[in-house]
Length: 386
Image 1 (cartoon, rainbow, N blue to C red):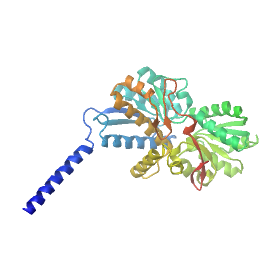
Image 2 (image 1 turned 135 degrees about the vertical axis):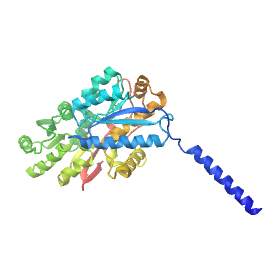
Image 3 (image 1 turned 90 degrees about the vertical axis):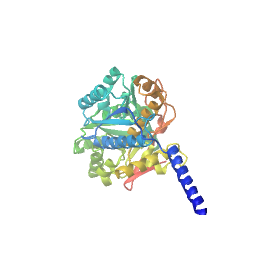
Image 4 (image 1 turned 60 degrees about the horizontal axis):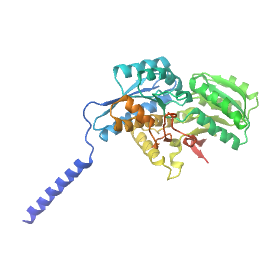
């Protein structure tokens, strides 16, 4: 009798465990998927941006579906590689909208490729959340276009505060000749003089140039107190190495376009001392424990490292933010592009890797100056400047 009672108790216990598991485990999503498009520079000279974005998109798709999908339906992300080329980006956007019938598109990775598809997305009336930084993506405002990276204008403002603190009043600019580089130069020339900082010389380079010695020699003749480099790897790494080889002896300040391991790996010891504005992802363990972004940043970093055996970086974070903004909106709207766009515009207090987003009818970036901190390369890694 005692054995029978014990057996009954075991069976009841097993049944209760099974019922609990059924209650708390997410059901596998089923039915027609919610389809989102993504355009990243997975290959080409901007692959240091596009690869972590692609990886992150695959990670988020897996996470969302493991948690039950969107309203019980699976998420599917169709990824296109534009190779950093504006024409390829436009072709990719057309395929995603007209063939795959996506509800929204995340990306592209670059300002130039984003601008190449901006008009098409407006005409097609499909939401776009770019992973590029240029302020011209959202200014002037376009009804269907948003972006997640902190703008180059905010980056220059952060740099200006650093220069004033260091009493630097003369700078030289060396920027790449892409839309991102030209946008950064425009903001440098517009904003720094308002802070009493003179731009004494400017030079440009091509993203695939392997030496900047000629440009740096010209800049040195203007006797700057610092050099600001605006571009994405590999260019800024070459600038850092050439400055060291030439013995320029002035600080190198870079844009947020170098906020990834690629820059550190390419520049090596020449990166030491480089200062740049960054989102908090790269210094997540150094920010206060009660900061609203810290938990998310550490969770994303852990998941990315576990999945891809490499550290997460700023650019993958832009894709994380963009996809989750869309997923969160779809959970409220369902598969309706117009309602999705409206819901995105109503986003308030969304904690992302790039900051805390507050979109509005007049602001499709939704970030302020507090989205940036300053970091310095020390000992081959990023250190938060306070």
